Length: 214
Image 1 (tube, rainbow, N blue to C red):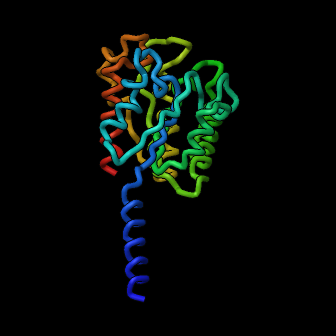
Image 2: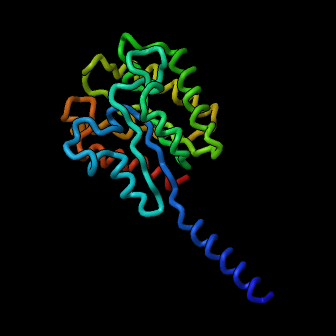
Image 3: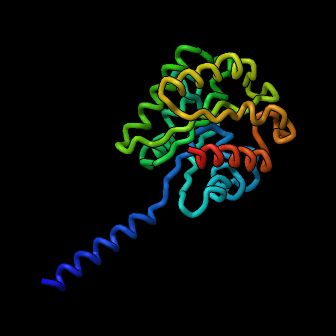
């Protein structure tokens, strides 16, 4: 009887120890800036990879970014139809970082009410995994050019107020990348829209700081 009790106690201890080593899963939802457009070695230098290094061994960060995608479902390339969206949901992440909205500012895409409705739907969908992940919403980085029709004025007057309103309504943490990069145009030498390796590293630092703070 004593041997049985000892075996059960040891098994319980081993199970608890294994459970304690489980990594915190992070899904980085986003567009080409998340995917790493313009970065020569994405597998080493895109922001989710750098974020993983900063956060350390206790975390596992997955890049769920897809170039050209939008929050809005009725747009030229909705994030909703990409396998990266399915991956983000299937990951059952503990933490989700959303950095979308840049491509929504294109003239053929932008609709303020539709953006807010679909952003809320995205949050609701990411919460249906049963784990109720901690969600961080990022304001888009500044657009220092009008490449692909992207418009910084719409980011400032439309996307940022909408993201702020939604974050407050859902009690989510906002990471203000627009402000963080306001005086760092040198990081966007690629095309004025996408950060280079140094910019991606800085983005990872800002996001890591927010995650560790919470």
